[in-house]
Every structure is written in C-alpha cells, then in structure tokens.
Amino acid sequence: MIEKMKEILRHRELILILVSRELKARYRGTVLGFFWSLFNPLLLMLVYTVVFGFIIGGGRVAGFESTKFYALFLFNGILPWTWFSSSLLESANVLMVQGALIKKIKFPIEVLPIMVVTTNMVHFLFGLPVLVAFFLIFGKSLTWWVLFLPVSLLAQYIFTMGLCFLVSALTVHFRDIKDILANLITLWFFATPIIYTYGSVPKALQYVLNL
Image 1 (cartoon, one colour):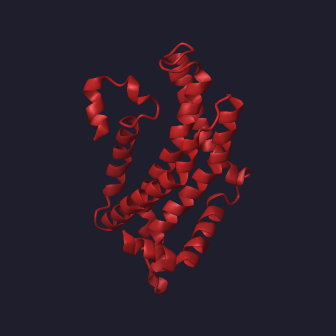
Image 2 (cartoon, one colour):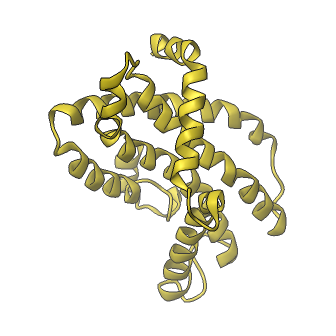
C-alpha cells in the first residue's frame, strides 16, 4: 500500500486532471450540475426517514429523541457509505470504460482506480458542509471528535482504494464480478449500522457486526 501511495504522489497531476474531467463529464448537460452530489444522499436520507420514521415507526424511531435526529443520523452514515459503494461499483468497470485511453498511449492503469476513489471523495466533501449545517440547525453542537475527521477520511480512502484495485483487476478476468459486487454491497449496507443503531441490534447479532 505504501507503493500505491507513492504512485499517487508520482502521478498526482494526472490524477487531478482525470478527476476534473470526470466531474465535468458526469454532470455535463444537467441543470443542477454538482448540486446532484448533495441531492442524491439527501433524497436517500428522506426516503429512509419517511419509511422508518413515519410508515414503520409511526413518527418515532427507537433510540432517537425525534425523527429529525434520526434523519441526521442517517445522513451522517449515508455520506461515507455512498463514497465507498460508488467507488467499488465504478471501479469494476473503469479499466474497460477507459480501455481506449489505455491502448492509445503509455498510460499508468493504476491511476484509474485512484481516480474513481478520489472523484467520489470529492462528492463526499461537497456533502460535509450540508451535514454540518444540519447539526447546527437541529441544535447539535460539534464535539472535539471532529478533529479526528482527517484521520478517518484517510483510513477510508486507503481502505476503499485497496478494494478498488482488487475489484478492477478481478473484473478484467471475471466479468461477473460487477453483478456479484452489486448484491454484496446491498447486503453489506444492511449489515452496517447506517439505517439502525448498533445498540438496537440484538446482542446475539452484535458479534456478527463486530466482524
């Protein structure tokens, strides 16, 4: 992994160019543009809040003072999850999608999974000010634990990048990886305390979550 970090530093200018190109291409022709980076997790948060907070919970979610705090909890979990899951799914296709670029010139292919992770990290960073705004609007003050945010971001970046290298390499030889991965990510989502709290899980299942 140290070697991969050196690759990032060595090709940082190329990575920045590719990330910029990807961001522009993704929202080219759309009316809202980069605002979709914020709207997508917000809409997902709204759906889960309505389903679990009102339809199932009857206006209250166990373990939360009110539904608005459950929505805050959801958004806090959905943001990093979207970064992680989108990176994995996109990395499954990145070598094939960028095949023409790889064949035409001498190109460091290890840059492509890095580009995918970095692009989705930018979307995540766009959502952070919105998350902070929700904290302030709902009267929740930020604690000193926020100082550890850069450390957690670096840990997720490295972890996600490692998985993306593996997925992109495997998909070249096994095209079924993408479909298998999509189902695994769905299972992983519901096995992670994002739409529910860790404390609400029966103790018999908490051991499984700890794995």
